[in-house]
Image 1 (cartoon, rainbow, N blue to C red):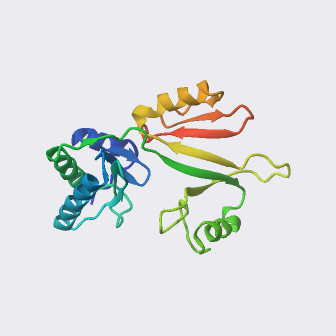
Image 2: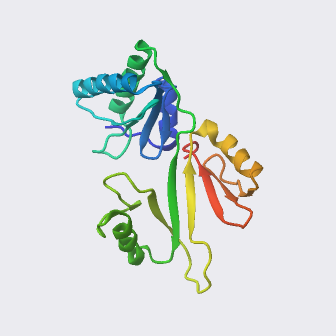
Length: 219
């Protein structure tokens, strides 16, 4: 089964004409502007019907004005053709009901922690964030409930003098990365390193604390 990630995922979205959906870490995401709770509930019920027919089930979030949908094939930990197919069916369903997609501002925030010994500290962060010290995988802390930010460990040389160890990775759709960077700079930030564009840009706040704006483009 083919799994799509990084730039290949963005290319697959374009090839399938899935303009409602954004590729982000953790799969495909879309948001539909239902406008009220009952309209959203009706859309969720129809999405559930499509999911049952496909035997492939998305994560769905219902709020008063919107319905959010996230798709990934957990058996391969990647987006596959069945996710793309179901995404197209969900978009078609929303259009039939006169519900527009509004996926602006969708994002995933990761916390990167610099460490010279991730094996030593990972159990602490897993226990602190999830209540179970064994919730650690190759990509960092795993929260089975999806409630905590993703925490990953960045290799660093041992050092005695403390420095900033955490930095947030703010993942946005590729088309929105430049606007997010401009907004951060306009708010007093500064670009430290943009040599890895379009994959990520390193910025600092006025105190020198660093953060990255990331996208899947070019990965």
